[in-house]
Length: 89
Length: 450
Image 1 (cartoon, rainbow over the protein chains, first blue to last red):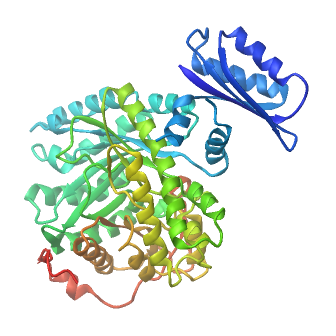
Image 2: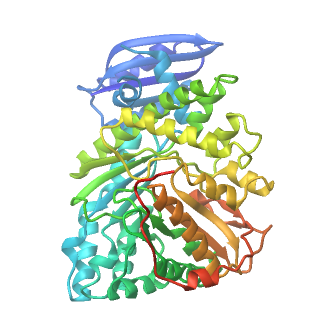
Image 3: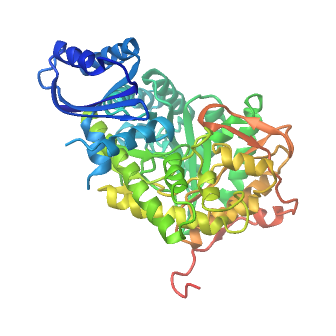
């Protein structure tokens, strides 16, 4: 299963590193990353593959949320299907 | 590949513009539960709802979390109880087990305490209709609807007369809760069999065993899109609405397909409705105002609503394999912050609302009227709405709440999605002789259509 991880928040050192470490811990493969700054606002979108993920989706979701709170950014993970459905004919 | 703009747009729609899937409704046939023994029917009905819908809430929450889009309500609709309960006559008993099952599986509403009497009523249907006030006032989650008119058969005015009395009785029985019972009862013309919205959802006789029907929402998303095209002409406005409706509907289609798969049910339809909530920024009235009306209810409102309604359907039809239900913009007064504000300011009248129902779904919805409004006047309001539906070949409905002890200027609050409603004035013209005549208003001619 492919999912989209979005990370939104104030920019600081090490956001990508922290999240990448977390992904490795759970066996989540990062397929693609897009990252930009919008008026000091850190915006990162990752396409990830959960085929080898060691945790249940809801566990991963709450772990990411928790990690986001520690880092000071908003992290969410959603099934890719919603974006594909809404934006592709 | 990642398209950052598309992803952020979707996230903004959910976070800031109240995009949600309003309801996934499991339409469940109870035809196999009919039995001459009341106790047996109750057991069969309870067992079937628990067996087929037991996981509905769990599935809804799982999908909501995985996809990242709120699914606000999980509901069940069933075969009209007037049919399932006819052999036993145990209508209220069935109402109570349905309500108990709904409570135990944790759904928001269960619809189908219903009857279809648009041409005439059987003796058992008459008995059933008389139980509606008791059944709805003694249950929490059960919703009731009655179809009293159709384009093919005309308007059953005997039933219309009875509906006024039922609404008054229901209001009286639930007066301690501001006549909340009336919010769970709707009278239809041309009722549809696959409606996922309450209070009017029931499983029609043409439907299958278990089907998932989805009601989408998203007035806030349409409003946000229109704010970005200030000054554009109405052709452009229609186009923007179509594109937005496409996206909203695709989300509904996705949720419905996945829910059906997880529940072992068929996927039925997406109901292309813009369903408002009392939340700020989730209002159909606001969309009309963004189009350029200083307040909903003024001249131009009907035209703006017609544009909106049509564009939502055109965008939605392209996005979904199966479209059905009521499909159109809803204009419930108590559930729409913009409508409430317009009524409070004296800008939106019952007459204008009636005109608006000719071009959108579904009818006079969630309107509080003075407690001393007579049963005959309520029946006359229903008859007018039926006439609009029957002649224009569309669904119309009436869900009015005569709040005991309240008058124009008072305001009733139901809470939650049902919102709050300023009590609106009704005409003081006496229509009782007309309603008292009974009989059928014959079906309209289907040619010479001017």
